[in-house]
Image (cartoon, rainbow, N blue to C red):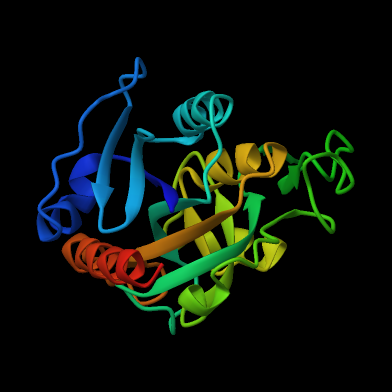
Length: 225
C-alpha cells in the first residue's frame, strides 16, 4: 500500500517509527516530506506543521504530485463531552469550520450564516465536509465516529459550549479542515483520527497519554492495513 501519514511533527509518531526500526529519509524536493518502508507499505510522512494554513498548503502540494491508497491524519484535540476522555481516539467523519466568522450583536455568526459559504459549495458532500471513504472500514470500525470543528484558537471551559451547541460537535482541532478540504477536492481517500489530550468538561489534561494512544493506535493500524 502507498500510505501518506500526516502529523504536525515527526516527534508525534516517533515511538511508532522506533517500533518498526525505520528512519524516514527526505527523498523529495519538499522539505516537509520524508519516505520509508514499513512492513509491506510504502510510506510518505508529511510534517504538516501547526495550524490550518500550513496543513492546507503542504498537503495540497503533495497531492498535486501524486495520489495514495490512503491518507491518514493524526491530530491532537480537545473533547467537548465528559464521556470522551483523554486518550480516546475519534474517527472524524464530519469536520466543520468552528471559528471562522464574527460576533454580530453579541451572537456568533459564521460564513454560512452570512451566506458567504453554502452547504452545496465544492468540495462539500451531503451538506458538509464529510468523509465518504469506505475503504478499510473494518480496520477503523472500533473508533467512535465524531463531528469535529477546526479552530484558530482553542476554547476553554467557559467558551466551548457555544461551539458544541452550534455545530453539534464532539471535539476541536487546530488543523482538521486543512487536511479534509484538500483531500475532498483531490478525491483522495482519507481518514482523520483525533486523539484527545484535554477534556473541556472535566478539566483533565494529559498530553503524554494522548501521544501514547496515537503511537499505539498507529502501530496497530499499520499492521492491520
